[in-house]
Length: 299
Image (cartoon, rainbow, N blue to C red; front, side, top):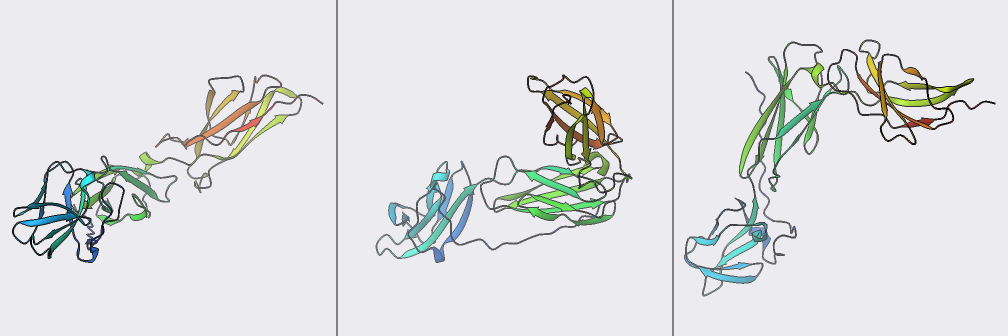
């Protein structure tokens, strides 16, 4: 098994922005040493001298013996800018920017494709949120081929150059890294199983002259599905009258038009359409925006 690994080293920032959970710091941030620690644990802020006077944001806290200041059961309220000083002269020995959070959990990955063979889109979520600056590395493998999943957002990526109906699954790997640790997860899938078209477009509802109980429905395949002649779609329709609380769903239909029969004369109907790959692979699209119409009411 061959993976493409990308490792990013980021120099830690020397300041901690105020986020409403700690004090507004007034000390010299230029020499601040970042310290990242887990929430809910006892945090030890170390001072290079012996017993030291500790300050936070310019406010004296207390004098603590070596090796430093202990913060039991640290919460977000403990975040901020700390400094230790010579108890007699006030000489600054060290300054610390404390950030609290969690090691990253394994991400929950979701991948889908709005058509084939265009591109696969993936996104991931973290629960609980680590609350710390977190970096992500996303790669994919298909057989012996590997590549980087190109980032499209803070927690999303995409890749192309796909093989349709391949017997080898694609495998997406997302690694999450923050100052407290790292975690990874993989998602294997066959391309056809993650197909989810976009909703059909340009839905039109028209009366049929001389037909007071019928409506003509017409629509177009989604523009993101570029080859409907080679990869057909099937469609479901959902319609309701103003007075209906539960819509009626019919289909599937392989054409992009349908005559709705036995509708109540003179009544406004609201229609939506959804698409799915004709061989029933993957998931159906979301419903299209509704379109409305009333049957023919005579001259």
